[in-house]
Image 1: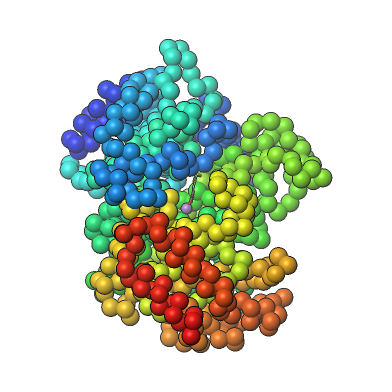
Image 2: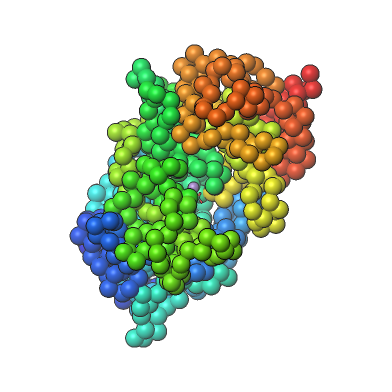
Length: 606
Ligand code: O2Y
Ligand code: MN
């Protein structure tokens, strides 16, 4: 489709300005069709950037290898450029928006020389839903176009909803570095060096400018940039919630269903929980979303959630038929793999796929690779952040209502983290503000030394939103408290804290996790239904010892440990929050949360 054919004058003008600045060879407006996807894939295959996988084993699947320097989100190059630094808060990188636009305009000047410009109109959420938002991404990356086709709803139908003057979030993206005359990317993954990468958000004007990276969250701008960082600001202003949460549906043996949203820091098995296969007979879990939830109040005063995405951008390593059979089935066809290993017969392989590498592989860097199980220091065949991009509709347990434009009514919200001690298997907030407190103290043990933290320390990641909140986290906590005042407590979701990662003193797992987590979900279901048995404790409501059916291999003593309140441990936890965590948010930390901290401390002292 041509730019001249667009009905929306504002959009046309913005594209023309981008063309004048970036100077692409030509411009193409995406229509979202299958032919368009196929043509784009053909171009990527012809250039050598995509490798078609075995059509018998992986029909419609392609492998990409990124530049070794462009393999993940770049948090230290991600900016919230609000007018005032205080609005971005102490946990975001901030740059003055005028200065940043100057710097980036210079980088964008001529950056698409020798490349095509693609204009991708996309909807986050079912097209036309009143919870959905429209974005338009301008990019010079065909890889981005095909991934956006899977992860969002793209094309003509979106332009129809946008009409002549509808609102959209402009998202500018370039992989960076112009091509010299006659030069081509020639199968290479173009990107800029780290110091020239910018993933920038302008919250007041609702704009996203990304430069220099072609990978995942840096480049697929509908996901973390729009659906979380910009949407969190819109949600604050409009009175709803844009959250880093999965959405699942759980049905009991009597056929009654509830909907649960859950937030976990990375590496806590969020996609696995979203697609969980229950081990308790008669229970069923279905998926609505695996990463992001937008929640708005319905006319009945309840919160309704939609998954704004249309696909999964999941971590491949560790995904296998035991950990997540539904993800494995979702990626059997029509899937884009990035930075995984490739077998001789052109299938995919990664560490933790559940079987040994079958012979010689090509690793994610494009080199021959033979598994050496005696060499613990062997470089992996797949990058640890290797990804699959798969259409959500291919997941065998997608809930039929996953695209309901009205969303699903939320019964429970879960927070969790990787906590080997102190935090019990599950506990329930006494009320909404206590639940907000729980969200505000989310943290996970870091398993390997990373950044400036040593292995074994707890990295706090409130609401699992630290890298994704587009404004001051103190204001964000306050927004959550205010949401609770918009309706009555009985209509609000109940809030729980779960921890699948408890260990014994000698380092063994106390809880088997995976499908067995359905036992905890069943108790949460029953609590929402008014039946689950609980005791009131200083940290919240907790299941009685017989309220959760014990899985095989978990002794009664283990269960007691999993469900005990570690008074001394919690006193230390409270002290850590008081001395190290809450002060980070300065005067914007809501008084209600300090009060909650005091109240828990008092209850622990009794
Ligand atoms: O590394 C990236 O660019 C992807 S990050 C990501 C992808 C899917 C879901 N969640 C995340 C995340 O970082 O939370
Ligand atoms: Mn995520």
